[in-house]
Amino acid sequence: MTKFRKSLFSPSLTTVSAFLDRIGAKASDLLHKRMKGEAGQAKKHILQPELVFTRVKLLKVMMITFQGSGLQMKEKTEIPLREKNIILIGFMGVGKTTIGRLVGKKLYRDFIDVDEEIEKKYSMAIPAIFQQFGEEYFRKVEKEMIIDLLENTRLKIVSLGGGAYLDEEVRDACLSSGLVFLLDLSWDSWKDRIPLLIENRPLLQKKSLEEIEALFLKRRDAYSLHHSKISTNNLDPEAVADEIVNSVKLSWSLYEPNK
Ligand code: S3P
Image 1 (cartoon, rainbow, N blue to C red):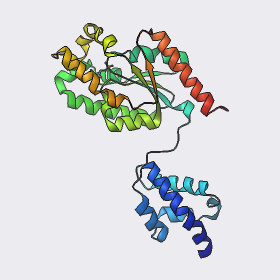
Image 2 (image 1 turned 45 degrees about the horizontal axis):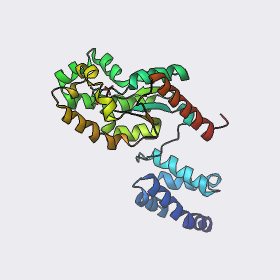
Image 3 (image 1 turned 180 degrees about the horizontal axis):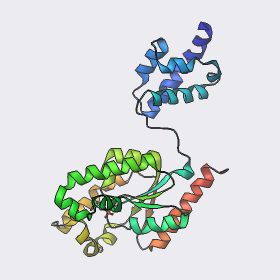
Image 4 (image 1 turned 120 degrees about the vertical axis):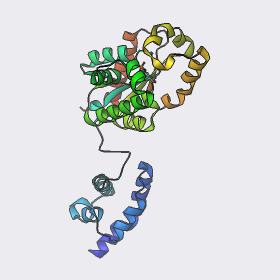
């Protein structure tokens, strides 16, 4: 048994450490300790002979083990691509709700608008929530709602409020559990919409055009983390929704052709 363990572990350690580095878990130390013989789940699982035939199997065992051990891993149990939520992000007023609703209809899926969910929960409009509780409180509620939603739902079309995606945890949750589409509009096209938006967008109020433009540009870095970008300049909502649906269907057929 000792001989068997040595030949299995020596070459695999490098592979497993590299794997752990790749997934960003700070688990190498723990893994090494466990492999050296300290009691732990990892050792227990690895020593089951039927689980150790190939490195691939070993890596799978390690993933399951580390999930069980409570370590945060970036690559959790994979959600099949076809079941992943489709998440729409982008600056306020780019059409996430309108387009999300259309995508939902076209794919026969439920549509969830996070702002609407918050409004339902509080029986209050977003500007009133900002006014009564403040932005910080709104962000907390928004974040909790999104994380909970993404952990507990699949197959939905989800539209996020424009500021939600600035939070790193929200971004990570979206990117790891869903297909993230950025609806992108140039400043020149977007600024013409300000009069239509300003009443219901507390963050646009009491700001000069220059300040609003600065906010628009500042958010671009966060929005640049996405799976796909659709430019909505000069496109009507139906056309944008069709583009998203086609792109989603293409990725399904490319990556999960047999389902
Ligand atoms: C916000 C965008 C709004 C809403 C709130 C804050 C933002 O949603 O969540 O007013 O910070 O960009 P929309 O993007 O749907 O307008």
